[in-house]
Image (cartoon, rainbow, N blue to C red; front, side, top):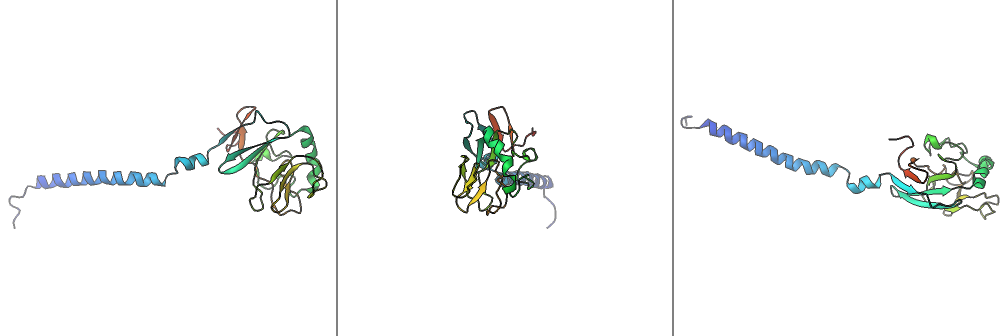
Length: 197
């Protein structure tokens, strides 16, 4: 068959139109596919910083918050609690917080930005249990010289009121101090480092 009578301009037009329609269709298919790989709003919220209002916390008390699905504790320590911390150094596994369980701004004897306010992730570093808050400085069945702190009843791990782990217990590390910063005197932003914009 010869090429007589074939309209090549129509063929070019139909080829170009099919290419454009196919390209648009590919974009419509690709956009939902790419969006499905992005984190959901729920996932973004799970990792988002959390504001902790500590205005109602009394000295010697603890408030609980949730960040990234974990319990976060804020303890308002009394002057007596703070004064007892150095006396425990000889009984602690990591008294100077040399292990990276806290941000650099909390690597001090109080393990906090402000001495009176302790911010900790409330999960034992042994097997992930949640220790009990035992603030009273009085003899306990697990420690005759107890000066207050956290006790994990699951396996007997003990932590002082700075979240530092005692020697001779199953927990290998101090409790984690999460990244945090003060927005005001009564608001802490948990999940964002001090000095971060």
